Image (cartoon, rainbow, N blue to C red; front, side, top):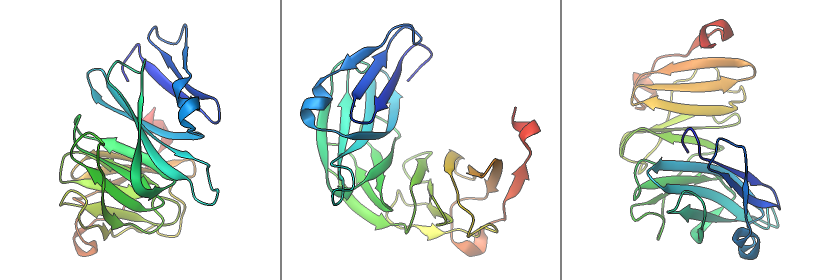
Length: 212
């Protein structure tokens, strides 16, 4: 969250919060009552607000997605279902009201802090996602390649990506023309705005020595 505050989710054990650089941790038991089995991702748009996405009854048969939100730096939490989303793996908020969640490639969008969620689009196989503003975002995952949006997630276009077929482990959206992706033990820089395939550049490798 910041230099002194961090939140950790442990499968079937709930959530732990530290406010002193990790010296001590507070267990949050309310999540056990709510039945959250797995917490997949956290995000904080700033201030005292923290969000997470997680599931109940993971893969049994499909884990129903839930969002948790805290307005006091993680001390108390409210758990909210995310409509029909399943197996939510990543969420991204650009402010305290607007955010997105990705559940097995299905993108859902909220403009009221998670009170309600609207399905936007399906990005086949994507599990990672990042937005840099209310229009520009990226999504990737496994062997899905890279998807980009320039309209706030309403439509997604698969990007020109020279390494399609390789497993993308993670994606980080830097700005509206740059994303970083991890493949194996290498980091790649992906240039150009998230437009359709014809407007995109290929990836270029960044050696580990340059990233340290």
